Image (cartoon, rainbow, N blue to C red; front, side):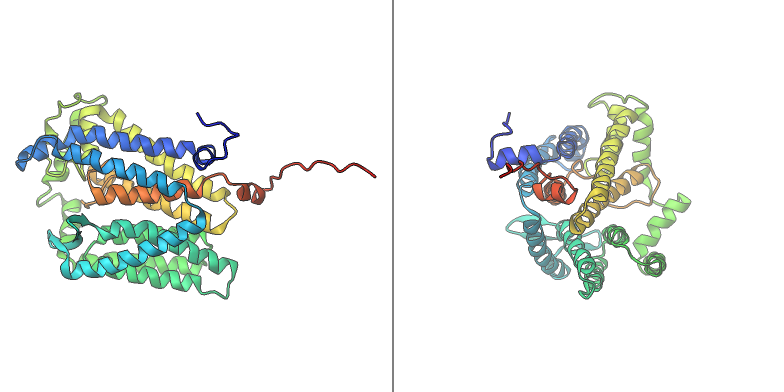
Length: 383
């Protein structure tokens, strides 16, 4: 246990970190490993791999993800901004490269291979995009003559254009929704709200019209016709689990779900551990989002408020989309459940994002001064 008198970096970190956030993130990582052992063996055996191939790799991904999250949480706000700017520039270059040399999967190019590793640049782009936009919004509010809002809008257009070109409309919706929340926090006028709403609806209509796979998914969701096998089995797994599940390793429906270890791990949790486990997982995500927004609301520094609000928003929206797809409340969309679904790029990118949240919400002396706290001064003796 660290003493409060210890002024080492680790001790200072321990006494200033938001331990509720830290506990929530560690809980999700632990659940990711447990559910990987439950969900992945059937998938591995079906494609001729060792039963615990994906579970072992989940642990391999989680260890560096944990290290990255803790390392980022030691950084100061200025270092967070610099790191985000570097990551943003690199990922924008890689997203352009993906369109030409990326690996094509199911008609989309979202992955690029570097030194034998497959990387999805859009996953790493999200936290960097949020931080840079938060800085631009904050600079505009601090000095209105700086066109920060305009630059943030241009950055959004650039990122959305690259995502649509892949195409990855799920990430496009996620990034656009998060940007809208941050802009709202920055005090956008009602005219902008109306304009963004109209643009969003128009974008959905355009996607339905231009991209056949988007139209097919929406039609299948609305009519129930066509190939709905995976989402039907996901719902069946949840129903089969009832309140307390059939027991670890005893699930049967999970064995026929193609992506049970990735996009549909939530359904596996419901089948083997019951709806109680599903509600527990949902409560952790809800706790992170609500605590993050509450912390952002109380924050006096504009950059920190927008950044924390944006990071927990993208985290919450991604988890909500994944769970809604599992519950058949939304059309099918390949989006991972943060820290729980299988995936190396997703694990590391989310670890960077939540490490930024831990870093920005640490209790620092300058924050205490901003909130009106000060240390008592010793009275000088009268002469």
